[in-house]
Amino acid sequence: MHRLLFGVLAISHVFGSGCGYKLIDYQEPPSDLQSVSISTFRNDSYEPGVEFVVADALRREFLRRGVVALASDSSEADLVIEGVVQPINIRTRSFSSVALALEWEITLRLSVHTVRPDGSIVRIDEESTQSTERYLASADIEATRKNRDEAMRRMATVLAARVHDMLYEVAFP
Image (tube, rainbow, N blue to C red; front, side):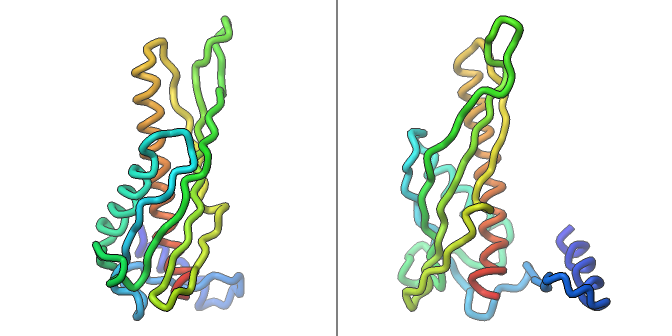
């Protein structure tokens, strides 16, 4: 799919659409980005452990793409990713005829910034680091909790992919 998208962008660029798109090859690291260190985010939400879910999703995304190496020591990395998990918003989305919640909606927001070895900070667009997911409610509270946790992991995975892609677009244009 990445090759197809790359080809479509290349064709639109060749024909001079002038729409502001640029070609990004996600299979080649920028010349000055060989390794990245991912710090566990600060958790400003009331959801315990969500910072570890986010850090794990980011690490998995970089490993999955396999282009940039993960550095265990932030002092040896070309880029350090850090940030904050903002307060999580959970609300009901649908009700049964007797006013029981059938479906919940959860929103995960991150404040992400990256730090280069020279100390310069690259902020990532906060609108792109927000994701919303719906999950089913259940009379069994453990089933509802499991559904919420799965929704949280899916959102963290989506946001990790966005952060990875934005690094190519923002931090290393």
